Image 1 (cartoon, helix red, strand yellow):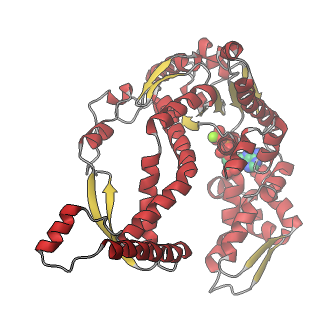
Image 2 (cartoon, rainbow, N blue to C red):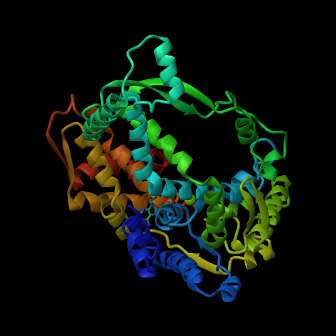
Image 3 (cartoon, rainbow, N blue to C red):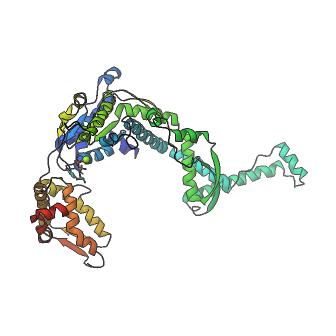
Length: 470
Ligand SMILES: Nc1ncnc2c1ncn2[C@@H]1O[C@H](COP(=O)(O)OP(=O)(O)OP(=O)(O)O)[C@@H](O)[C@H]1O
Ligand SMILES: [Mg+2]
């Protein structure tokens, strides 16, 4: 697992594009731009200290019509990034008041991601040790170790009138205990004891019992009330009764927690956010002013102004410490069909020097989108239907026809990009999805061109109908 991660961290731009190609058809300019940006993060890390400080990330704006893969690129990139990565919707910062969040919270969220990331890496590192410690604990319960007698204990024994054990007996007992323990350890490791019930002390993290909402603005300062209250409560030990299998899991986790140095984790997390963090701001066009200076625009522009210092580089307080945002990479994306990039405030435009346009999708693209990605729609439907013991196949002719219908409807009604394929397929497959397995009992269903024309032809010809259905 670790090895694989390291490999991903070192993916070259062309390898990154290749990974993205598995899920996203076309859009090669956008893929190239993000691949270069991602690799540059790694490159910068290899550069000597003083120069490294000087190298600023080249933030990117992805521009393209709706449904052509902007968000999808972000989603896939996050899996490759091997760096703290979050995606936020710009519009959520415009909803002032109760639901709206301050813009800095994106940095705090990024730190949370990083802390979890580092923590789970460290957990893997200590796993072996934690497993051993947990095993010892369970063995202690199964076969309590023989106490080394002290003179006062011996005195006690004699008062209770027990038979005095000689030092020899005692030594024998210890040896016997040890060998039973080893015998038991083997059984435990083999999983032979998994179903046995055992009682043990578990370190409960105190449940505060309710979500504590801080006074307004506490979130701004990055103070976590929940945690403060939590740490004030004494750690409770609670008796738990579970199977040994379960106990092992719980105890291993507890031991791992104890072995991890949380302070070091937090430091490392902040360091990673500062040097390789990526924030993807989706729907950035939603915070661009549209020319009419009505109410909402004020709030939109406000969000842009708040965004400015973060993108440019400033210090943000988080509950784990101060984060410098200078080297965080920002990738923004938006359809920009109402507002234009030039409607963003000029200062902000300047902070996104790389602009990449994504193309509208063609009929050919649709054919590929239907069939090629690892999670291609047709594969998805096939897997769904397969759970009923039925295989679903599409002939080439059918696929071509679906793609054709999709681009026709996109042209005639509204261009919603690849999302059109979703609506078309649900309509096309409606009867089959309803009928399998009891009304339709074929074991193999083949969709051909005629089936598609039959089912969709009428709807496509009738504009009003397709507006509602497709
Ligand atoms: N180029 C593409 N290759 C494969 N699938 C795509 C492509 N473009 C879009 N899709 C699919 O279409 C759907 C919508 O795409 P996505 O969410 O990326 O749109 P978007 O460009 O972010 O649009 P919007 O501006 O409306 O947010 C997703 O299910 C995605 O998988
Ligand atoms: Mg999107």
